[in-house]
Image (cartoon, rainbow, N blue to C red; front, side, top):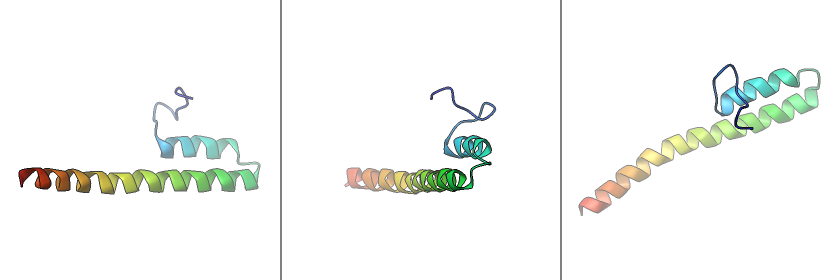
Length: 64
């Protein structure tokens, strides 16, 4: 699983593109893969928004 990449690129979006290419002939499975990929991407972006805010709050709290 660690060597599963899309032409050298990694991450949830690269894995989604690679998996979607392999399940084109099966529309139900393609829908499920796409749904899982969108869910994973939303978790990634949510984490990217929350982490800096928590870091700033912790730093401000430490100053007091």
